[in-house]
Length: 159
Image (tube, rainbow, N blue to C red; front, side, top):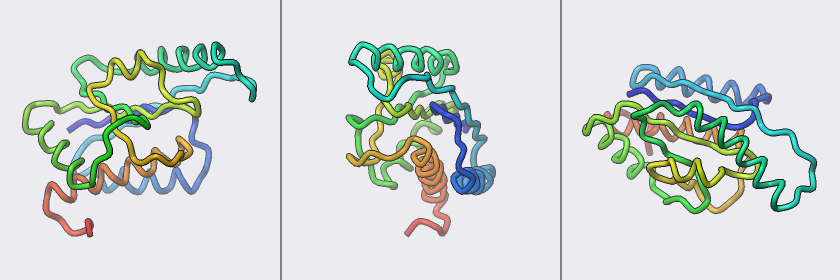
């Protein structure tokens, strides 16, 4: 399986990079994983609704330009479906079984994802109702993908 994670913003925190690198290394025996960072749109602290929409649209255009044809797109969104680790594993296993070898996860910026990106998504996934920094969300996502593959292969790790 080929997994791509597209995220808005450059990851700067060393501790997050180290965690992501560790899980990416562990995942390498199960899947090929690529990370694409989209530059976040520069904007002042206080934005009008129209300005927020414009920022999300510009980021969304950059995201959509990086999504390959034929890939199954999973957008991380607050209104997405919440799943257990076992459900996520079963869904990834089903995608592999039915020929969807390319999966792209999309993590938006601090304002979220534009409607065009959500429309392109094949599904929306929610990790909870709490707000997490999008950089931290990348680490959580990679860990859960790794956990999913361990569950699929009945390997120790998941408890």
